[in-house]
Image 1 (cartoon, rainbow, N blue to C red):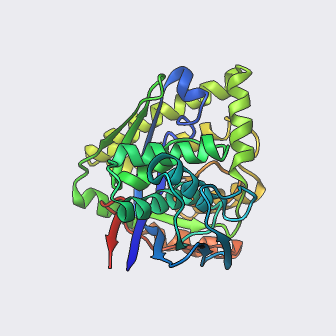
Image 2: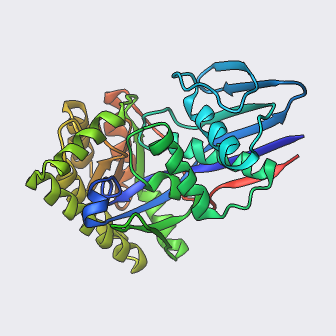
Length: 340
C-alpha cells in the first residue's frame, strides 16, 4: 500500500512579512498569494518490523532509524522528524514503522515556501494513512506549530495556509493569532492574463531566510519606525492587489508590485543586494512595470510583471545573470492525498 500526498508551492504577490510575529501580533497582517504548479510530494510505504526510513529524494539524503515514539532532532531531515514526533505525540500515541519519501520541485531557500509546503505534504500523508479528523485550518495550524514551536524555525504563517488551501487567497492575520483565509473568485481570464504576464525567475541563489526574518522581528521589537512603517505599507499593498485582481485591473499589478518592493527593502537589511538590484533594473529596462523578490529576500526566486508581450524581452534581458525562468500556472487545489 502507498499513501501519497502533494501540496502546491506559492507565489507571494503582496503583503509579505506582515504575517510574521511580533508584527502580526501587534498590528495584524494581510497577505495575498497564489499557489502554482510546483509541488512538494510525500509518499508513505508501510514497513514490517521496527524500522523507520526517511528519504529526501531531491536532496539525495536517506536515513534509517529504529522505530521510537520520538526521533532526535539533529539536523538530519528535521522537518520529517518533527512531523512524525508530533503525529505520535498528539494522535497515534504509539511508534510507527514506515518509509517516508519526499521530493520538492524547487530548492530549499528559494522563496516559494518550500519548507512549510513540505511539512503540509508530510502531514497530509499521515492524515490519509491514519484517517485523522483534521480540516484545512487544523492542518495549516499544525504545520505552523511544528515548524515554529517544535522545531523553533523562524518564519511567518502564510505558507502553511497557502499550501493547505490552494488557490488565490487574501489572508488576514489577527492580533490574537487568528488566521482567516479568504479565497478570491478571480475570473479565469484575469488569472490567465496574470500568469501570462508574470515571469518567475530563479536567480540560482538561495538564502537562509531565518536570518532575515530574525532581523525583521528585532526591528519590530525595537520599535524601529521605518521598518514598521514599511510593513504598514505592505499591508496596504495586499488590499490594493486584491482590488486589482477582483476588478480585472491586471494592468495595475506591475506598479502595485513595485510599490511593495520599494517598501519591502526598508523592512531590514539583507532583503536585497547588488545582484538582485541589477536583475530588477534590467527587467524594468526591458519592459517590466514592477516586480519583487519572492519570500523573505536575499536570493531565490523573483517575479516580474511584463505587460503586452514584454515577457519575452524581459526573459532575454535576464539571460546574462545566469539564472533561469520557470514555467508555471496558477492552481486552484491545495493539499491533495490518496491511497494506492
